[in-house]
Length: 429
Ligand SMILES: Cc1ncc(COP(=O)(O)O)c(C=O)c1O
Image (tube, rainbow, N blue to C red; front, side, top):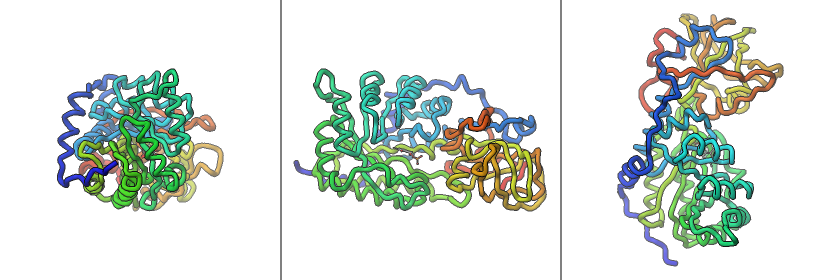
């Protein structure tokens, strides 16, 4: 099979996607079940809630989704894993996100129930055969990822009818790529064995209607170079296997912004991906996909917690490692914090203890808060929309939180100039 030649540069893929996606597939749902927010985090703190309160900012998720739809030079899928809230799914759908990356039957059912017209892509490379069969036959899923011949055989078996293999599968082979630029590695668990890759690509091509290559550079990738490197691997794989590729899916990994982890603008990532895609030996009609989780929802939620006790520079708060602060506890991430009252005291570093009865419920920080903070004070912890609220458990009887919609700006954003807006009467550090 002859290889297509490299794509011409400056191909305007952006115009191709935009209008099709919105006109053909998209029907807004309306946000009837989300009370319209007219309050700020500060106002909620004045109510002195006893439980932690998750503060939702639908406008921030909508803005992030519009950014990807308008600027990413291809199709943006939402990786449901990052935050499976049905309210968020509706916000993203209303913003124009029509395709959803799901990893389990729970996510398949959730998205299908919430968004009946959404296109589901089962992007977990290791699936139960029963899940594949159910997703294909009962939920209309046609897109699956895989990284072994065994998984390919499993998919073909599970989707066959009366021993006849289907002709409508979209199969994406997951490459193993480096996570060196990411704060969370995804380099070990998945990705085709290089020794098997050529054979796997050829076999997947034969079993597919549309055939693709996907990868994940690791979460919170701090440099666009991560994608350039991975696209180099894609290029090598296509040339080595001499196959026609219909879809290149650059996965998730797009960063959000946290204290000490301020990434370059997302447009830099998009430019590098676009250039690399244009240089691939693929046909003119090939599609470019991405699957952001974090970048679409990190700004969607924050958490309002109460200080229950102070011991020196340690604050005992009412949410923690088993709640929305998994990353703060287990990966040592610092999140932005803001005391919800006036204070002129100088900022100092605090660590947090969460509410459960064990030492593991500890967030080292340091979290910079005014030196006069005390029990009874309220603190907003920002940027918890991705892998924050989604990780909450009810361990030790905690984890029941209230939810409020607010319309002030998130504590940080990659999508505007909103930092510190509407926070004039609180200390924002
Ligand atoms: C297959 C796949 N796609 C997308 C994502 C989303 O990644 P991120 O939140 O870093 O954008 C993940 C997260 O683990 C994933 O496993």
